[in-house]
Length: 161
Image (cartoon, rainbow, N blue to C red; front, side, top):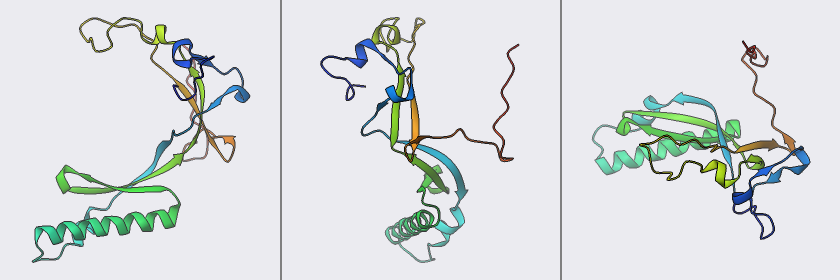
């Protein structure tokens, strides 16, 4: 919000609302990574360590295998791929993320309503604030379409009761 503000237009203080897509503000230096899939690669990473290796050699071998998995994943999918270590090396999971760098600000409340309630570190008394911001992700210059279910249909909307 600060990067999008100007001396004439303080978005943090005054908030922002884009009534049309043409009014949305492009957000520099902002990205969103959406988890597309994940896979357990524990056997492959741990299998790269051979009996008799020192701890340093085993660690280097695991890191090399993780890098090889990530490189192959990027080449095969074009997604942002990262092997995550869980449980202090008990499990290794490959996370595949779709990266969006064209994000546009749609709505942000003004500071006074977002901060209403006083001390933001005070968890003793209730705070009533409107601490929310909406962005729209774009892909190839077009708004990113909503995700569909595995059957290819959009998720069913709930009827108001």
